[in-house]
Amino acid sequence: VEQPPSRYSAGCSVEVFTAKLKTHLFILHVLILWLLVFTFLLFLTLCVTVIYIPLMLFGLLGNILTILVVWLRPHMRTSTYLYLSSMAVSDLLILLLLPLDLYKLWRPRPWPLGDLACKLTMFLSECCTFCTILHITFLSLERYLAVCWPITAKTVVTRRRTRAIIGCLWLSAAVSAAPVLVMVGVEDTDKRECRCTHFAISSGLLSAMMILSNLYFLVPLCILGVVYSLIGRTLWLRPKSSRRDQSHRNTVKMLGVIVLAFVLCWLPFHVGRTIFSLSLVFSDTYAPPDTHLYFLYYLSQYFNLVSSVLFYLSAAVNPLLYNLMSARYRHATLHICKSAPTFSETSVTHQLDS
Image 1 (tube, rainbow, N blue to C red):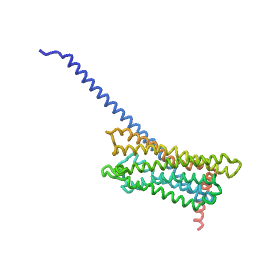
Image 2: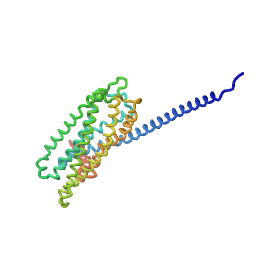
Image 3: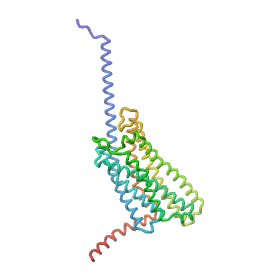
């Protein structure tokens, strides 16, 4: 005679069904979560791409115009604008590397240009980053001398010395960025991704470079804070009727806005890069899904995606700030733009006459 199912077996069936239901619900929740993350990442990538393209075009045009304004207008070749034109060259090189970053954003692997190109592009990006920071720092020190020690500045600050200092700044930036040539490369022959090498992580080179990069940001930031405090104090105590002091005030205002934009745009960039470097150093891997650093690693990816926009914005926005804050630069820019068609027409007329 067939026995009816006991209460125990019925209870087991309910428990098994409940356990399976919980498992399926958990899997469903995970799939929905990953779908939301993927959708958000895709949306963020599309937004960054839409911002990158006009930002690059605007930045290239503005920085090229800055270089032309300084070198085609003799009265613009002051020490201040020599620094700004050299910084425009640095920003121009940064923006020229933007298409490669955009390519890696959509297709991080395989890297199509080989190991040497990987090293050179990363080195150039780091070199220009250091160079821009040094230019802003020394430009602010030059303004400090001009405002607080005007007699000394007349003898110390000359065009020849300014050009020599600019050359030294580029050399210092190149030497500081030289370890990047060893740090990055294309190691995996299958994936062929341009990235930080295992040697750089295991040897501590990545940690040392991260410290150097942060010092390159924090030390100049402290110097800028002290310098502009002293400049502000000096200008505040002087009478405002002096035409020279009014010119100094206008220049200092422009540089103050440039420094503020620099801090706002570069602080997230350094924070994101530090988080990413720490995730690599502590995990010694590039994708740590089985460790507690999983969240830290992917947080840095999202953070870097947003901070990179601010990084390139910093390279593109300076010419706009010059136009807004400096009437002298604005007039020189208008003169260059107006004389360009005239120069073209003169060339055509000369060719027809000859």
